[in-house]
Image 1 (tube, rainbow, N blue to C red):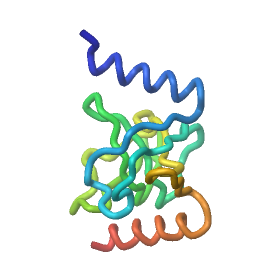
Image 2: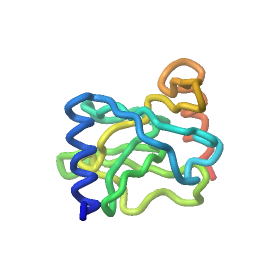
Image 3: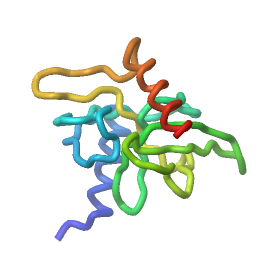
Image 4: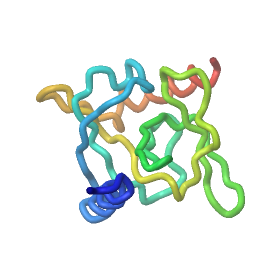
Length: 136
């Protein structure tokens, strides 16, 4: 039987090798931001800090989570991220260390349509979502 930790390790290896992977989308924590997305295109995160408003992918409890970066700070010689699902009331606890970040959502796919989440209008909408989420 394949263990969950083996699957996560294999996905991480694949992402580091190819610098990008596409995985099926699931969950509701991002609300309308990723509503009806069939798949997420995840790029490897090699530089820190990640920009505020981007959807970070991080590992916690042998799962990958995709939540928006609301803020980042530097403590104990590493970056930490305040992240939150757009549809959730409170930020993730504890905050996410840079070592737990595996990548970021560069695009989502809805059927045959690919929506780039890191350029132009989508980046502005991501920043606004982060600001509104943080204010709430």
